[in-house]
Image 1 (tube, rainbow, N blue to C red):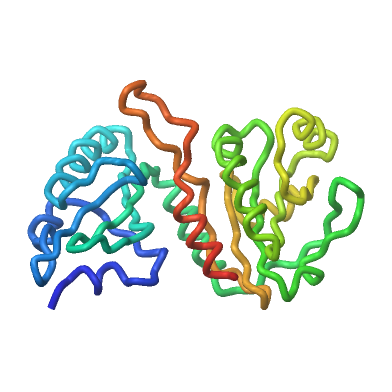
Image 2: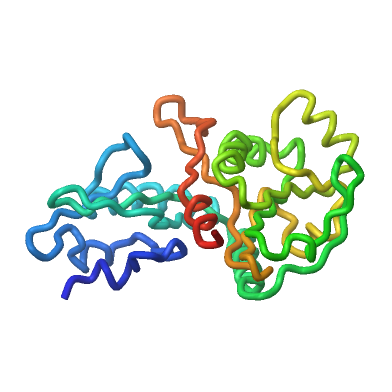
Length: 253
């Protein structure tokens, strides 16, 4: 009985796995019926066997451990190509604080979205109750947050591609600051400024996206879209990985 389907449920976007020495011990490099399993960090990226990926993660984990950080990996998609089962994954380094925050987020999943009564940039009231019956995504951000800015182009595309979803951008900043930002950069979501108290119910770390189903129940809460690391420049690339966001959005439509 192969292990992969049990450990990576076919329809689960939240499965998280830590790569370590036990990866090789389980023998995940091969599937039943001579099926080949490979892993990649996004379209066009190199394909790794389980052994190769384990080696990469081990090396990075040692460096990060000295900084008090843990390297985590999440399967964000899978694809069958002839005799090859291809998994897409993301790698993310996180501190103990980040992991504590994520545990807090998970405590909110499955519960109703907290009520709010805010005003958009036009001064019109927007309430949680008025959104009932529609899928809703809240993005908590602020105008000088680098990870927030990195994901804005992707957020704009998601809004364009999913017109039936209510996309709301909430920030603790005042309306005038958001308006000044929008004069320089396009962010096409509906904006709800002056939402400090509401944002604080979820996080002090930005960005954060909250996915709410048509019944007003929180389905998923995820952090910012991971930025890719450019091996040549040794810097974070402007490109982000949209897979986890896309899977979460699919779960509420």
